[in-house]
Length: 543
Image (cartoon, rainbow, N blue to C red):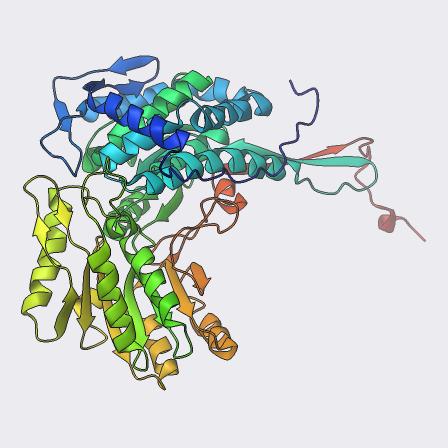
């Protein structure tokens, strides 16, 4: 029963703490890191009201310190997917019928818990489990996830306020219902905030969710799940399970009550999902919502008028923060010939100034890539470039996995614009540069637009406003998030809604009202106050 309209105003983005030497947040974070490392956690699956443990325990190791064990999680199998769906559907009616303000306040409480007592724990589990430095973890695991929760509550309240007009003698209203069935959330390793947002954005709308995180993100995912439980999330609304992707897909995509998938991951996996769902369409109760943010081959295009120092900083930060393991990371750069040598010299100096090592040493800018599979894949690209006459390694290229999965940030110059590392997503600390004739800017624009199948993020660096205008127009479909005189990373919830098109996804813009519409099904209700009692219309009368 609603006894009033409950307003949730536009929030303010959560302030980013700096963790400077001598700061209280730095001291507390280091204490929590020591606490987490001294404890070996046993992580169950969360299905309905049960903590489910199995006979298959998988060890969790910091990517930068593979000899250390953070704990174990209990891997599931097909029966656990069925159990999670059953638990979700059992919770559905009561969750959908809960008053909106009660649902909203659960997530607002979770945001406040993260902003306060659990901030160092969300950051700490992300740092240790995903090898993020303190600042990158703060932006992701604290600020962004807090912003997702608070802004989504606001956006949803705005949707509920959107009502149709009513003519004389009637009242029209719009109900925004959750989808029929359950939503599957499949989340990646690289952003704890994405892991939090994909299941909660759907749940906030009244949906029930089966959540499968990447195995390499379970350490921080379980911390977030514990916070949701403390915030009052009812059992069964979000069910956290650790089951391999093919098994999840086989069960969920063949279930009549499958209502949608919220996905972030590889383009190939998403394509397979879409194909499977399409083939199974006749079995579903409703057309499922398919929402995905996938791969990227994100560009930085410098114009001859650009400030070389701006170019260098945008590339060093945009390509190598979090070891380039961002779907938005700068992966290909187009540098005009008039500044190529200066940019090259400064990029090499910047790379050589980077410190690389564990996350506990706050002076390290670079940490480890996520796992051995990723390490081997990235190393293969570097090794091939080292032997290829069509490429030249400017700096970096050293790879060492004795103690952790460390890859030295690497810059490759491509001698041709369609060289493999200019086209394929690598997802690691590798930037490929192509030097183009300074007076061939329009040709460079064409290369940017056609070289890669992706269209996630990109940036134009220029002081010439005509060049900015031209690039903005010509690259309209090349990036869902386009940056002018900035790196192509760092989208902020409520400020730069995030998502791309082409092979980069459905562009449903996480961090905006647009994404939430996908998890709602509208019902129009018309009530007539004095209904007619005769079928005849006035025009039918005799003269």
